[in-house]
Image 1 (cartoon, rainbow, N blue to C red):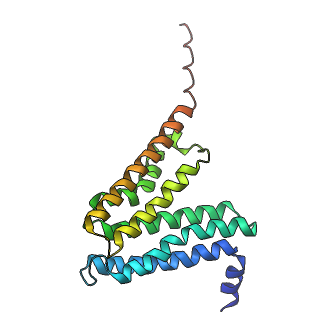
Image 2 (image 1 turned 90 degrees about the vertical axis):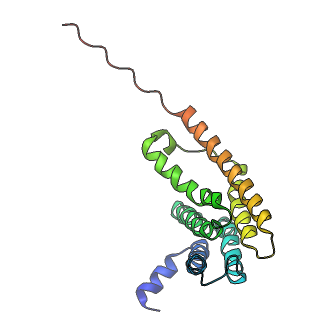
Image 3 (image 1 turned 45 degrees about the vertical axis):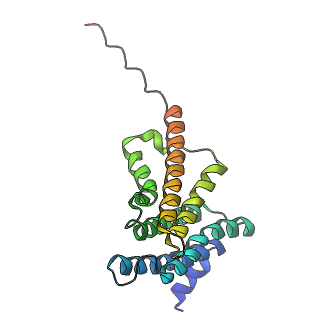
Length: 194
């Protein structure tokens, strides 16, 4: 390892290393999804399922490692969030041929982000809600179940539909909270009499 690469590696927290490893697995998932969509691999292959499951499951590890080692950082949390969103978006693409609505699972964080450009209120801080975390985790579980070759297609469709419904509820609740909390527009200044 070069000295520069070694310095960067040592600068990563233990949780960052988990996120980096998960991101690398995500690249592998993306490659397998591309091969699946190109028709080279069968839909819902054991290979894709076998790589997607640990990639999705590691999302629960990096945060726990950060808390346990006392190395929680805003940078690490942001990286974890971006890795989650990218991995979910890529994984959704493998599910779209038999459950097209699953694309909503992958697009939701990006649509919210784009909405914040139009609605500044959406940039506000949200309070911690355990249910938000649970619903986010269920998205990964639903995608893993949908990719499982042993789960009937109908089961995969139902699971992704329920997961998307929960996600829409979660984002809708957050948007309603942010809209209620937005600062009132300043009153227009009175005009000076002529």
